[in-house]
Structure formats: C-alpha cells, structure tokens
Length: 374
Image (cartoon, rainbow, N blue to C red; front, side, top):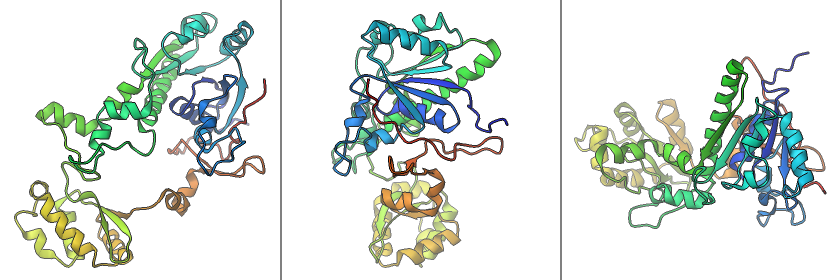
C-alpha cells in the first residue's frame, strides 16, 4: 500500500540546533520523512532552556519539544574522526541535510557541502546562518529583531521603549525561507537529478519580512512610527479595547463599509457620516480622536453580545486570548499532536498548517527524543 504522506521515504539529516533549523526538520517529519537529528554530546542547547514549569531533570524541555517531534536522535562528537566518518556515511544516503554552523565550522568538522556532495551529488544541503555565509557573527533572534526594525516598530508608541516579539519571530521567518529553498531544490532535482547547496540568513529573512513597513520607507522616505498594535494605514485596526465585562478585544476594520456597520452596532451611526471619520484616509489622520471615542463606547458594552453582532454583520473583530485559551479552542485541536504515553504525556504543536486533498499529514508522531547516551 502506497503511503499518502508526500515525503514518505525522504531521508533528512538535521545538524541544526535551537529553533529555525529544527522547525524545518519537524515540518518534514510531519509529512512522512525520516528525520535523524545529529546532536553534540551536550545535546541541542534548547534542551537546557527550561521554564519554571519544566521538569528539572528531563532532557526534553518545553522549548526543545516545540520543534523536535517525529525525529530520532544520534549523538556524534564531530571533533572525532570516527564521528565524522559516520556522518559521511549517513550523508551518503540522505536526501536533505540541514545545518546551522557558523561560517567555517562545517569545513572544520569535515561536513561541508563540498565534502559531502562528492559522494552524494543528489544531496540538498541547506545552511542557515545569522548574517550570511561570509559573516562570522552568530545570529541570535533578539539581536536580529533589534537590528532589523522589528523591536522599534513593536513599541507601544514612539515615546516608549522598543519591545521584542514574544516568540523568536526571526527564527520562524527564516525557517519558512529555508523550507521554501529546500522545496525549490527538490523540484529542481526532479528535473536535473542533482542536489544543491542553498543558504538562508536570519538577516535576509527578517528584512524580506518587513513587507509594507519596509515599503513605506522605500517609497515615501519616512521611517514608520511605532504604533504598538495599531496599524499605520488602517484605522481602527489592531488597537486593544476593553469591554464592560473586562474582556479585551480588537477590531480590524479594513473598509469604509465595515466602519459604517461598526458604527451601527455601536449605536453611533453619525460617526460614519462625520468628514473626519467617513473614509479610511480621514480616520488615519484623525486616529487619536476616533480611538478615544471607541475606547469609551466599547467600555460600555458587553463583549459577547458585541462580538456576536459584529460577526453577524461581517465586521472583523475578536477577543484577545491567552496562549492557553487559544490552544484550548475547538478550532485549534487539529493543530495539536497527541500525547505519546507515560514517557511524554503532553500534546505537541504542529508546524504544518496546510491541508490537501491529495495527501495527508501524520496523524501522530513519536515524541521529541531524549538525549541518547553515547
């Protein structure tokens, strides 16, 4: 019987650590690939990144579990010749190798693309760096968030201090770029029969993701201002309000028609007729005045009734949820991997969010591997 998992039979070697590279490894595991994680004797560093709620003696921290479902693990000390020989043997049979070495380290350990591709010309070697293959700088997400404008833009206002995103956003953006590069290389290999060497940097991934904020500076010459959760070109969009029952909520009103419907729900239809609020461009210019009116009016209303009525009329709005509340929703259950018994009685979070009529994703995966003894 043929597997319906699209990467069944694909062999992936993961020499990457922390988040971006391991996210890519789990992506392939969820779609059927066999993923072998190569770790140094001390293990992936995220095994030690424990929160107060983690089990202190476990080698599988919550952070490590975020990106390592569906893999097996092998400890190799690549400073030793025997370990390098074993890695060469494994790479000779692999389809994809994911690495996150500092520039020069792959050559030092004898695991560069030039070394491995000679014996396996079909190998796709995906190398993640912080600042590109020519820079010796090690890439850390918080530093990249600072250097590429994200922390500046994430401040509550221009007068407030810059704020880091609550997840390693640049790592996750780089993981998507790395997946796209590997999938492109797989497509090319089908046509040419040959693998490829590809590189992705955290820096380039962050800059590519500035999107409209980057285009604002390139087109207008004006540096985008920090607006917290507000939007530079749409109002009301993203600002947090608090209803009479204490529930926090946001609006994402993208059209003038939606704004008129909002005003009807709020029983303030005359706002939509005021010249300063009638169009989105006018609302952007009069952002402060409108936000003050909305803050006062929404604070007088019950959140459940308000959100229900907005949904009925097609006005985008939602409650602000905690992480636990978000993952406890019925709609979120398809994104969870089931617990794997006494050894790891916790659910996991999938990396694959797309579905297809032509293939499936793994219904369950082995739990993140404990650090094996040498």
